[in-house]
Image (cartoon, rainbow, N blue to C red):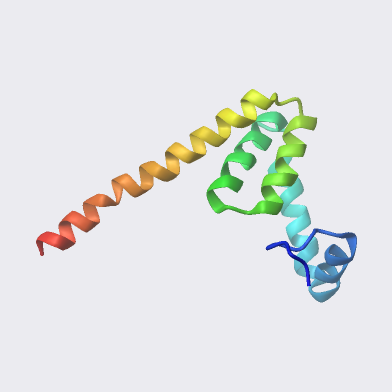
Length: 108
């Protein structure tokens, strides 16, 4: 058993996921390629969005993978960190905005 919380991503892990649900895996791969293809939003910006979202969803695999892809797409370390700060603000903003629900429930 590993001391790590999350197992290391390996080619074997990827192969097993693909083998267990090949059609769904292929559909996800196609969707991913379409989502990250250049379009109205360039590849670097899409990877910065992915880094930010990965921090909100707290996916360690996505954080590592999309940070590397953002760097390869030309994003600077400063841009990556700024995207993370935007994600942090949005997550905090959601908690702050939902305070209205707590105040409303408290007054009921």
